[in-house]
Image (cartoon, rainbow, N blue to C red):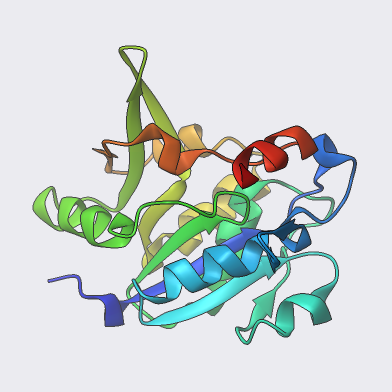
Length: 197
């Protein structure tokens, strides 16, 4: 059985924040608290250990009280580089990732992903929602086996950057969540303002 103690949670805060004018998105104020700290506190209740992936303002992230790891690949190589940063330092059989810009993700996110991974004997379980009759995938909300790190190293060093392409090399299962608004993310200043309403 996949229990919280077997899972390390990773908050992804390593992006450029280009759609938000280049600011460090995870440190933007949301209801008086940095966005990434919202994600960390929500995740803390669902996992056994915590980490943060960041490439700037490391000391600000370290102040949140979890270990901070930067991408092992230069030049902001995207979420998969953050996944790898986490996997390289993960000491549990499983790791779950959440982005720093989606503070209201489901409180049962990890439990439901773990249940699906176990049921389908999958290597990866990721969130999906139904929006306008179409399945929308949220691959940065994913639970993955620790031993996938070698596969990810090979994929990234081969120039791969797309999450879906890497997922396609493994047994991955989508897990549908009922409320699409739980996955609303603040990519721009306007979306952050919307989130605060």
